[in-house]
Image 1: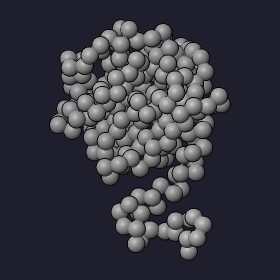
Image 2 (image 1 turned 45 degrees about the horizontal axis):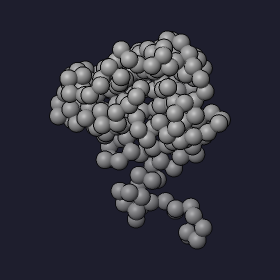
Image 3 (image 1 turned 180 degrees about the vertical axis):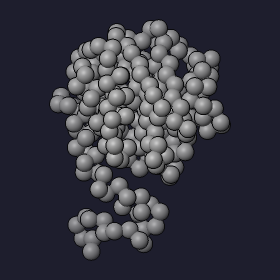
Image 4 (image 1 turned 135 degrees about the vertical axis):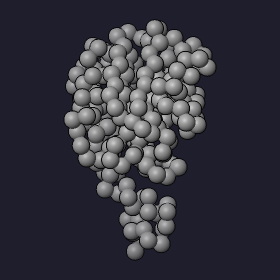
Length: 224
């Protein structure tokens, strides 16, 4: 029902998750990232608790590989779960339980891991990883490019209806958390459009949080 990637920007240290699914509001349940720690996607009959658990383990010093192995020991019904993780050093790990739905597959490299289930074909995660590695620019741009490549490679066996992209930087909160929770159109393109609008304003929103005295105009009616 889902294809996704977790990634680290080697240049900036940002982490991100991008995901799409035939299910509604997939990003609300499945996307997890923490500044300075890593990013996790928990999917396929998901248990949302696995994301924070993996991030806590990595914050405590575990690598992505060790954290995912610990999830295998501690998690319930892990035979149904698919979990992707990337850590602060760019290490990656994936768990895909044997009860993952339909055609499922995974691919990973330094700084990026991708997985999916109920896929049109088993080449989708590989296409996602390749697109991420071949792209450059802001991490958000690379996440969008990778999701688009996954869809172009076949995506899910059926139509996708929701998507999301989360990016964390140095702050305790995401600097971007964009979602399309349901559409009959293309949710990936809906998120891409939101990113195109949001990206030029991202730094201003961060500045407003850190020191509103130095922030640019808010750009709303009545603001001078």
